[in-house]
Structures are given as structure tokens and as C-alpha cells.
Amino acid sequence: MTRFISAPLALVVWVAPLSAAAHSLKELEAQLYDREKFFQSVDRPAPAFSLQDAEGRTVTLEGLSGNVLVLNFVYTSCPDVCPLHAEKIAEVQRMVNETPMRDLIRFVTVTTDPARDTPEVMRDYGPAHGLDEVNWTFLTSQERLEETRALAEAFGHRFTPTDDDMQMHGIVTSSTGKDGCAPTSTVSVSRRSIWSPL
Image (cartoon, rainbow, N blue to C red; front, side, top):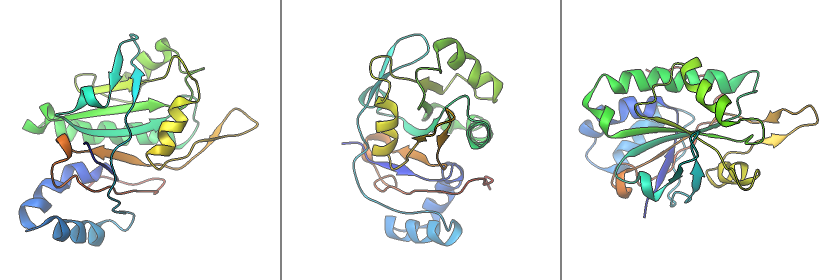
């Protein structure tokens, strides 16, 4: 069973050095709490999903097993934090992709506005924000428009539609471990609006 962590993207970049210095998962979590005040550890399985990419191919959580996943939720017409979040993920992705970790980590973005985030919009979003399709995927739901917001909530993140066609939300980045192996047997949540990777 896959478990997930939801944390600032910086976690992906500095968890390896921390885990080498830590002697146990409990010590690693203590170090993360010391370094990141928005880190929250919660132990629970990652919610399963079956969504589609911009080409209409089905992508499932089970199908992505064997990779560490860095998963976030956006809607492309968001005027503030979603583009910043995407660019921070791209920044971390560039750092990861310069290392052998590139083949171990998959970055996944899920839209919370499938009605407006069409395949064409989805195809343009990654390159516009510096995301590399070599290990990044943008997912949507083509069957039930509310499915991706429900998935965001299952991951501990809420996108609330407003009267002006916007969605009120914060930033949460989730990570799943390869097949639930340590140190990714916990969940952490970051609700910081703007942050910088180390």
C-alpha cells in the first residue's frame, strides 16, 4: 500500500542528506520539524486515483508505483499562487533532474478545473512554467468534473469555488514513497503560501 507525504517541495531536495544523518524515521521527522515549521507528519495511505493526461491516457496511482511522486493541485486560470507553485516545482525539478534521482521521481500536477483546463491548455501549462515533461505529468478528470477537487481534499487540500469563477485555496504539495518504503511512510502538510527551496 502506498503512503504519502505532503510537504514543501524542498523536502524532496534535502530529505536524502537528512536521512543519511538520521538514524531512524522518528529522528528524520524531528529534523524536518526543526527545519520546516509547516511540516506536519500524518501516517495514512495515499488516496488511489485514475485520471487522464492531456493525450487522454489513463494514469493511476498504482501505475506510478515504483517512483517517488511529488504531487500538487492547481487550476490554470489561477491569478496568484498556482503559477508560483508550478514555478517552484519546476525549480525543484531542475535540481532533481541534475542528479541520478531524476529517474526515481515523478512530478504530477492535477487540475481542479477540468472544465476549463482542456488538453490544449494542459499541454501549454508545463512549458510556460518551466516544467520538464521527461518526468512531469498534468492530469485531469474527463468523466466527473468534481473528481479532482475531491481528490485534492483526500490529499488534505481544499479548492473552494467562488462566485467569480476562482477557487479559494492554499498550497499543499504531496509526496508518495516508492511502494511505501521509509522515509515516506508519513504524511506532512505545508500550508505556506510562498516559500523557497533550500
